[in-house]
Length: 234
Ligand SMILES: [Zn+2]
View 1: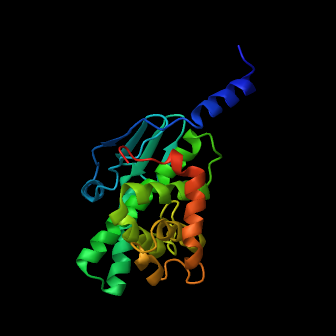
View 2: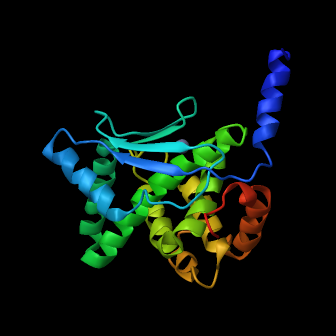
View 3: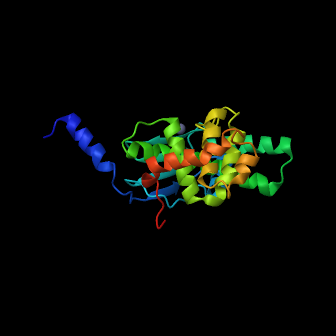
């Protein structure tokens, strides 16, 4: 029997460099209240949990009632939990912002879908981080999230950057607060295709002085992590 530390290193190196080939499966649990049911429907209709991203080992996504507004990745269980209470928190926060800005209902709905996609891809980012034997951190999860979102849902990239920017100043939305983190996330998304995603720079969601370097920032992250964040058939 190998020394425990050697066994750990072996198990980590065997994950690294292997082409990711396992699937992400999604399950929606029943909601226990009308408010949670509204959140369940919103999440389901948004298609935010639909993904073709491949992972090193099978990952389960469970949307459910938790009693608190959370989203989390459990490495031991290989499970992402998205709580209906967090979806509700995001919904109410985005609704409040839309009311103060008098944004149209189509734009508000695109932003909402973008916000839910950010919630999911951030957790998927945590999953890809630890499943690839890397040290978990918010920044690492966000780097993966930008790559997977750009690969998986290119049409959702602009509303996702906008939603994250809007949520950055609000506390209580798990993992997505903070203007610095939001700017880095927006920079990577913008940098993935500065022509197609020009609105991210125009909107000021990435600071103007940083925008010209975002394509390089994205290229660096993509070189380091791109082979671990691939989409089926793409
Ligand atoms: Zn996080």
